[in-house]
Length: 256
Ligand code: PGA
Image (cartoon, rainbow, N blue to C red; front, side, top):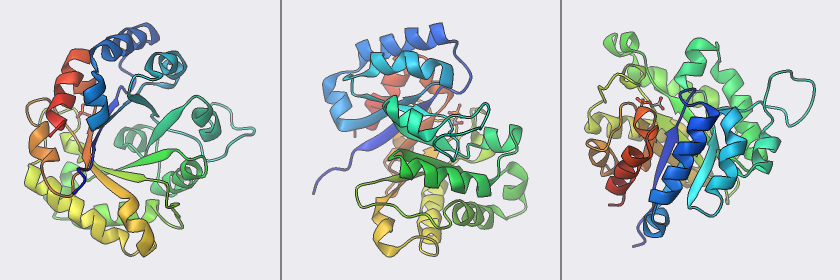
């Protein structure tokens, strides 16, 4: 049986200045071995200002480039927005969509995220759709329902070509940046729930094209417990991706 490669995406959020991003990108490039890059799909999503600076550093390094958001039109009068076609032209491979920080602080809805997913696929970018419950939703026993609704709203009328991939990252909001990751068994249960809810929105032939990641306080110590779960194809990492040495440690653990 062919071993599926695990996917590890580092989300640098708005944490590094362009100078710091260039420094960390160069460090990462030095530290990543060709064997590691062959066994794990590694990506970094810097902020938009750093994306263009980091792109040439990552060229032929085995580290792919991701964006943290995109707009849903390719071109036009959309002040302040970023075109998915332009991201593609800068060699971006992934685009994170619907991250909870965008939903929380920029009032982004899953209806908008839906349009962005369609735009990303139209431009052959791999969407990384983020879903996850708040602490209160979890406490009230609504977690599963909330996640199913998020997935189904975000994926309305989404068609995936046979050559494309769609990623869904399960990120419980209370686990992000808190140092308190969810239990690996629960992440696996939710990955299965996500797969189940896809049946109602996607064509059957598209289902194998979807990969599931876990995100929320992933670090070099706990990553193996998540990615060794069946049904979890990798991780989305915030804090532990900001420092090259630590991120490489984490990726080494993903080379199961
Ligand atoms: P964290 O962030 O790893 O710092 O918890 C994860 C994320 O927001 O994607």
